[in-house]
Amino acid sequence: MESGRLTDKVISALIEAADRGVDIALLLDAVGSRRLQRRDRKRIRAAGIQLTLYNPLKRAHMKHFILRDHRKLFSIDNHIGFIGGFGLSDHFLQDQHQWHDVAVQLRGEIAKEMADVVYNTVYATEHETVHETVHERVHEARKRSPKQHTPLSAALSDRNITSAPLTSTPPQLLLNEGAGKQRIKQEVLNRITHAENRIWLVTAYFYPSMKLRRALKRAAHQGVDVKLLLPGRDVDHWSLWWAGRFYYKRLLRHGVQIYEYQTAFMHSKFLICDQWITLGSSNFDRWGQRWNLEANIGVENSTLLTELSAQMQTDLSNSLNVTYTDWTQRSLLRRTLEHWGHHTMLMLERILKTLFLRFRR
Image: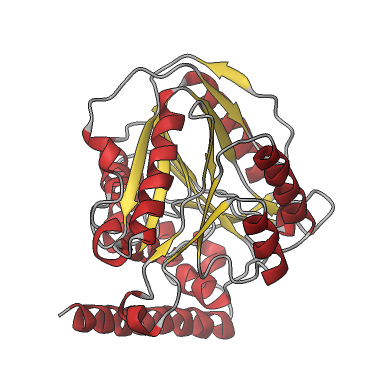
């Protein structure tokens, strides 16, 4: 969340709701909201809105600085929810240089579960227990038995696709709990391993684990239609982009199809495995899976599957198909940058992991 025209509109709407007596809790990651100006924070708090910053950078807590909240959850009246990869930034305005993203609107009990996630984290943060408990046990409400959900609605951003009622399998809330449980990672690997027809993965930051790379290559080798839709040169983290391209060669050689989106920054994050879909904040990358709190939904739903498949086909038509032949003929400079990005990210990973483990002793 950063200051700008979109955030101004959101803050104004929140203030109007607060004036109607609506109880509002706004949970922001302290690093992810560093560009939210002081005047906007004052407006929020002056309206009586509870503003909580997750894991602020304090000297006493520096040993936990890498643990971040990357989830994108919005729950209204415990009945309507939104989940996706979007943020509150002018990047998402139609008249700006767009970031291309996807979100889903949900209704029913799952919206209550999303609210529980937010309030549990707020409680832990306000009681100074966030660094010891949240990344280990962020969602206590998940222990209760699952309940029935009312129909879910699909809404895809910046393409103006009309929401439609969905009546198939109720969605499940999948959570990665950072240094603790990694349910999204486990479910994704399981679904990819057992996929029979197609694996379509869309992500903004392609930095896959060895297990994910092996699963994708194995699936492609077995004849599964494996497509990766990734950002083109329109990115915001160059070292990570070059690091991800380091893995292209072996994936392409094993039959994985790679496309790079050309018309905007591809910020969407979803995966289709046969009839199953997961969508949310996770980039399916080893950085986020190791350190971040993430939230996705997992669902088998024919209407959402149709809409996401159509969206994927449209995006593929605006993408560059990276072939193995073309890739082997890339320049020496590009090869050098890929190795630089790869080794830079590896070194950073190792340093942070070492510091984190040392500080936890």
